[in-house]
Length: 120
Image 1 (tube, rainbow, N blue to C red):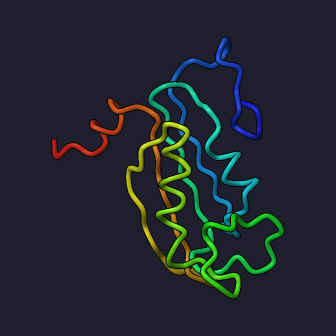
Image 2 (cartoon, rainbow, N blue to C red):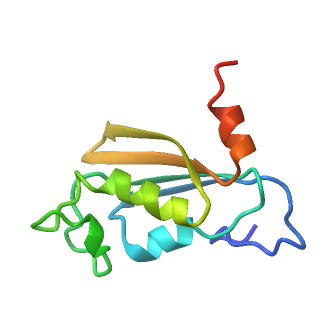
């Protein structure tokens, strides 16, 4: 698979698991890269700083909540952006390393969403 995870579907048709461990600011370019089309039944996981976009040159305006912060807006914004491209949110997890982080997982089919969210 190419390093950016964008594939030629004539060659790659099976489900994919893509982990985009950005561990940085949720810049527009990274969000766009992560919402690209994938084979059906795929899962993509992204991680971003959960509080600040300080220093980002292409931070989406919609997630800013003043002073380059976005902690209140990041999770709902990412869910909305992924949904526009047909991705369903499986889960979101806030955690702490050297800074506050957000990890979110998405799938691109209802069948995979139902399977991964079933109680069985």
